[in-house]
Length: 253
Image (cartoon, rainbow, N blue to C red; front, top):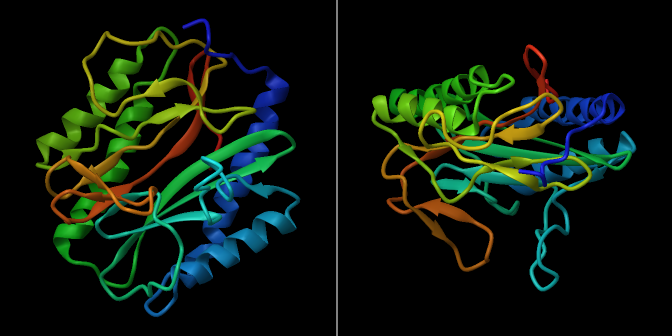
Protein backbone atom coordinates (compact mmCIF):
# COMPACT_ATOMS: atom_id res chain seq x y z
CA UNK A 1 0.00 0.00 0.00
CA UNK A 2 2.85 2.37 0.76
CA UNK A 3 3.90 2.21 -2.89
CA UNK A 4 0.77 4.10 -4.01
CA UNK A 5 1.89 7.69 -4.48
CA UNK A 6 -0.60 10.43 -3.64
CA UNK A 7 -0.60 13.27 -6.15
CA UNK A 8 -0.29 16.94 -5.25
CA UNK A 9 -2.70 19.61 -6.51
CA UNK A 10 -0.06 20.73 -9.02
CA UNK A 11 0.40 17.20 -10.34
CA UNK A 12 -3.33 16.70 -10.65
CA UNK A 13 -3.70 19.87 -12.71
CA UNK A 14 -0.98 18.73 -15.12
CA UNK A 15 -2.68 15.35 -15.39
CA UNK A 16 -6.00 17.09 -16.03
CA UNK A 17 -4.41 18.84 -19.01
CA UNK A 18 -2.98 15.53 -20.24
CA UNK A 19 -6.37 13.91 -19.78
CA UNK A 20 -8.05 16.80 -21.56
CA UNK A 21 -5.81 16.23 -24.57
CA UNK A 22 -6.80 12.56 -24.60
CA UNK A 23 -10.48 13.54 -24.58
CA UNK A 24 -9.86 16.10 -27.32
CA UNK A 25 -8.17 13.43 -29.45
CA UNK A 26 -11.30 11.27 -29.20
CA UNK A 27 -13.36 14.20 -30.49
CA UNK A 28 -10.95 14.68 -33.38
CA UNK A 29 -11.17 10.99 -34.33
CA UNK A 30 -14.96 10.70 -34.09
CA UNK A 31 -15.84 12.04 -37.58
CA UNK A 32 -13.43 9.56 -39.18
CA UNK A 33 -14.96 6.48 -37.54
CA UNK A 34 -16.89 5.20 -40.54
CA UNK A 35 -16.81 2.34 -43.04
CA UNK A 36 -13.71 2.27 -45.23
CA UNK A 37 -11.24 4.00 -42.92
CA UNK A 38 -8.22 1.94 -41.90
CA UNK A 39 -7.01 1.68 -38.34
CA UNK A 40 -3.63 2.98 -39.55
CA UNK A 41 -5.28 6.16 -40.79
CA UNK A 42 -6.96 6.69 -37.43
CA UNK A 43 -3.59 6.19 -35.77
CA UNK A 44 -1.99 8.81 -38.04
CA UNK A 45 -4.70 11.38 -37.26
CA UNK A 46 -4.34 10.83 -33.52
CA UNK A 47 -0.55 11.04 -33.54
CA UNK A 48 -0.61 14.25 -35.58
CA UNK A 49 -3.05 15.87 -33.15
CA UNK A 50 -1.15 14.79 -30.02
CA UNK A 51 2.20 16.02 -31.32
CA UNK A 52 0.70 19.30 -32.54
CA UNK A 53 -0.48 19.89 -28.95
CA UNK A 54 3.10 19.55 -27.68
CA UNK A 55 2.68 16.07 -26.19
CA UNK A 56 4.02 12.62 -27.00
CA UNK A 57 2.05 9.46 -27.79
CA UNK A 58 2.35 7.33 -24.66
CA UNK A 59 1.99 3.94 -26.35
CA UNK A 60 4.29 4.41 -29.33
CA UNK A 61 7.44 2.43 -28.50
CA UNK A 62 6.06 1.29 -25.14
CA UNK A 63 6.90 -2.17 -23.86
CA UNK A 64 9.85 -4.54 -24.25
CA UNK A 65 12.77 -3.38 -26.39
CA UNK A 66 12.49 -6.43 -28.62
CA UNK A 67 8.78 -5.86 -29.29
CA UNK A 68 7.66 -2.28 -28.56
CA UNK A 69 4.10 -1.26 -29.39
CA UNK A 70 4.20 0.19 -32.93
CA UNK A 71 1.25 2.62 -32.81
CA UNK A 72 -0.11 5.73 -31.14
CA UNK A 73 -3.57 4.24 -30.56
CA UNK A 74 -4.61 0.73 -29.58
CA UNK A 75 -7.27 -0.06 -32.19
CA UNK A 76 -9.28 -3.06 -31.00
CA UNK A 77 -11.94 -4.13 -33.50
CA UNK A 78 -14.80 -6.51 -32.68
CA UNK A 79 -13.28 -9.65 -31.10
CA UNK A 80 -10.08 -7.79 -30.12
CA UNK A 81 -10.27 -6.99 -26.41
CA UNK A 82 -7.26 -4.69 -26.13
CA UNK A 83 -3.85 -3.72 -27.57
CA UNK A 84 -4.94 -4.01 -31.19
CA UNK A 85 -2.16 -2.83 -33.52
CA UNK A 86 -3.11 -0.23 -36.17
CA UNK A 87 -2.77 -1.50 -39.71
CA UNK A 88 -4.55 -2.04 -43.01
CA UNK A 89 -7.81 -3.35 -41.56
CA UNK A 90 -10.73 -1.30 -42.90
CA UNK A 91 -13.69 -0.64 -40.67
CA UNK A 92 -17.02 -1.84 -41.98
CA UNK A 93 -20.67 -1.20 -41.14
CA UNK A 94 -21.61 -2.94 -37.90
CA UNK A 95 -18.09 -3.05 -36.42
CA UNK A 96 -17.10 -1.72 -33.03
CA UNK A 97 -13.64 -0.35 -32.31
CA UNK A 98 -12.11 0.21 -28.90
CA UNK A 99 -9.71 3.13 -29.21
CA UNK A 100 -7.26 3.37 -26.31
CA UNK A 101 -5.27 6.61 -26.24
CA UNK A 102 -2.43 7.68 -23.95
CA UNK A 103 -0.38 10.87 -23.96
CA UNK A 104 2.67 12.18 -22.12
CA UNK A 105 2.40 15.91 -21.41
CA UNK A 106 4.84 17.90 -19.25
CA UNK A 107 6.08 14.71 -17.61
CA UNK A 108 2.69 13.18 -16.74
CA UNK A 109 0.42 10.69 -18.45
CA UNK A 110 -3.22 10.73 -19.46
CA UNK A 111 -5.02 7.53 -20.49
CA UNK A 112 -8.56 6.65 -21.61
CA UNK A 113 -10.47 4.33 -23.93
CA UNK A 114 -13.70 4.75 -25.88
CA UNK A 115 -15.54 2.13 -27.92
CA UNK A 116 -17.08 3.57 -31.10
CA UNK A 117 -19.82 1.93 -33.12
CA UNK A 118 -19.32 1.99 -36.90
CA UNK A 119 -22.60 2.88 -38.54
CA UNK A 120 -25.52 0.74 -37.45
CA UNK A 121 -24.63 -2.19 -35.20
CA UNK A 122 -26.77 -5.14 -34.19
CA UNK A 123 -28.94 -4.82 -31.07
CA UNK A 124 -26.81 -7.54 -29.45
CA UNK A 125 -23.60 -5.58 -30.01
CA UNK A 126 -25.20 -2.27 -28.99
CA UNK A 127 -26.24 -3.90 -25.73
CA UNK A 128 -22.64 -4.93 -25.11
CA UNK A 129 -21.36 -1.41 -25.74
CA UNK A 130 -24.03 0.19 -23.55
CA UNK A 131 -23.40 -2.27 -20.71
CA UNK A 132 -19.64 -1.68 -20.82
CA UNK A 133 -20.21 2.06 -20.52
CA UNK A 134 -22.62 1.41 -17.66
CA UNK A 135 -19.97 -0.77 -15.97
CA UNK A 136 -17.46 2.08 -16.03
CA UNK A 137 -20.05 4.39 -14.49
CA UNK A 138 -20.91 1.77 -11.84
CA UNK A 139 -17.24 1.49 -10.92
CA UNK A 140 -16.82 5.25 -10.72
CA UNK A 141 -19.78 5.59 -8.36
CA UNK A 142 -17.96 3.45 -5.80
CA UNK A 143 -14.95 5.78 -5.61
CA UNK A 144 -14.73 7.80 -2.40
CA UNK A 145 -12.35 8.06 0.56
CA UNK A 146 -12.31 4.92 2.73
CA UNK A 147 -14.06 2.81 0.11
CA UNK A 148 -12.03 -0.12 -1.18
CA UNK A 149 -10.91 -1.16 -4.64
CA UNK A 150 -12.85 -4.38 -4.21
CA UNK A 151 -16.04 -2.28 -4.14
CA UNK A 152 -15.18 -0.96 -7.60
CA UNK A 153 -14.53 -4.41 -9.03
CA UNK A 154 -17.62 -5.89 -7.40
CA UNK A 155 -19.89 -3.22 -8.87
CA UNK A 156 -18.54 -3.80 -12.36
CA UNK A 157 -18.65 -7.59 -12.17
CA UNK A 158 -22.14 -7.68 -10.67
CA UNK A 159 -23.62 -5.45 -13.35
CA UNK A 160 -21.95 -7.18 -16.29
CA UNK A 161 -22.71 -10.71 -15.15
CA UNK A 162 -26.32 -9.82 -14.26
CA UNK A 163 -26.78 -9.00 -17.95
CA UNK A 164 -25.06 -12.18 -19.12
CA UNK A 165 -21.67 -10.81 -20.16
CA UNK A 166 -18.13 -12.00 -19.41
CA UNK A 167 -15.69 -9.83 -17.43
CA UNK A 168 -12.05 -10.01 -18.52
CA UNK A 169 -9.77 -10.89 -15.59
CA UNK A 170 -6.24 -10.72 -17.01
CA UNK A 171 -6.16 -7.03 -17.96
CA UNK A 172 -6.81 -4.35 -15.38
CA UNK A 173 -6.89 -0.69 -14.50
CA UNK A 174 -3.82 0.86 -12.90
CA UNK A 175 -2.30 3.77 -11.10
CA UNK A 176 -0.89 6.49 -13.33
CA UNK A 177 1.27 9.59 -12.99
CA UNK A 178 4.89 10.08 -14.03
CA UNK A 179 4.71 6.48 -15.25
CA UNK A 180 1.98 5.08 -17.46
CA UNK A 181 1.48 2.09 -15.17
CA UNK A 182 1.87 2.51 -11.40
CA UNK A 183 0.34 0.95 -8.31
CA UNK A 184 -2.41 0.15 -7.54
CA UNK A 185 -3.77 -2.60 -9.77
CA UNK A 186 -7.50 -2.03 -10.32
CA UNK A 187 -9.44 -5.24 -10.87
CA UNK A 188 -12.81 -5.16 -12.61
CA UNK A 189 -14.10 -8.02 -10.48
CA UNK A 190 -13.94 -8.86 -6.81
CA UNK A 191 -15.66 -8.72 -3.44
CA UNK A 192 -16.92 -5.73 -1.51
CA UNK A 193 -14.95 -4.50 1.52
CA UNK A 194 -11.71 -5.99 0.18
CA UNK A 195 -8.61 -4.50 -1.36
CA UNK A 196 -6.81 -1.20 -0.99
CA UNK A 197 -8.56 1.55 0.99
CA UNK A 198 -8.97 4.67 -1.13
CA UNK A 199 -7.74 8.08 -0.01
CA UNK A 200 -7.68 11.55 -1.55
CA UNK A 201 -4.87 12.11 -4.04
CA UNK A 202 -4.85 8.59 -5.48
CA UNK A 203 -4.96 8.66 -9.28
CA UNK A 204 -5.82 5.56 -11.28
CA UNK A 205 -7.76 4.24 -14.24
CA UNK A 206 -10.92 2.16 -14.33
CA UNK A 207 -11.21 0.40 -17.68
CA UNK A 208 -13.59 -2.58 -17.77
CA UNK A 209 -13.26 -4.96 -20.72
CA UNK A 210 -16.56 -6.77 -21.17
CA UNK A 211 -17.13 -9.70 -23.55
CA UNK A 212 -20.30 -10.71 -25.34
CA UNK A 213 -19.42 -14.35 -24.59
CA UNK A 214 -16.97 -16.04 -22.26
CA UNK A 215 -14.47 -14.01 -20.18
CA UNK A 216 -11.44 -16.01 -21.37
CA UNK A 217 -8.83 -14.34 -23.57
CA UNK A 218 -6.23 -15.30 -26.17
CA UNK A 219 -2.91 -13.51 -26.80
CA UNK A 220 -2.00 -13.48 -30.50
CA UNK A 221 1.39 -14.23 -32.07
CA UNK A 222 2.36 -10.53 -32.37
CA UNK A 223 2.69 -10.45 -28.57
CA UNK A 224 0.21 -7.58 -28.20
CA UNK A 225 -3.21 -8.26 -29.67
CA UNK A 226 -5.61 -9.86 -27.18
CA UNK A 227 -8.83 -11.43 -28.48
CA UNK A 228 -11.78 -13.17 -26.90
CA UNK A 229 -11.29 -16.94 -26.70
CA UNK A 230 -14.61 -17.54 -28.47
CA UNK A 231 -14.07 -14.72 -31.03
CA UNK A 232 -17.21 -12.89 -29.93
CA UNK A 233 -17.08 -9.06 -29.64
CA UNK A 234 -15.61 -7.21 -26.68
CA UNK A 235 -15.96 -3.56 -25.62
CA UNK A 236 -13.98 -1.27 -23.32
CA UNK A 237 -14.40 2.15 -21.75
CA UNK A 238 -11.79 3.84 -19.56
CA UNK A 239 -11.28 7.02 -17.59
CA UNK A 240 -8.42 8.35 -15.47
CA UNK A 241 -9.68 9.74 -12.14
CA UNK A 242 -8.46 11.19 -8.87
CA UNK A 243 -9.96 10.40 -5.48
CA UNK A 244 -11.16 13.65 -3.83
CA UNK A 245 -12.25 14.37 -0.24
CA UNK A 246 -15.90 13.97 -1.29
CA UNK A 247 -15.65 11.33 -4.04
CA UNK A 248 -13.81 11.45 -7.33
CA UNK A 249 -12.98 13.72 -10.25
CA UNK A 250 -12.55 12.37 -13.80
CA UNK A 251 -9.41 13.78 -15.43
CA UNK A 252 -10.14 12.55 -18.98
CA UNK A 253 -13.39 14.41 -19.72
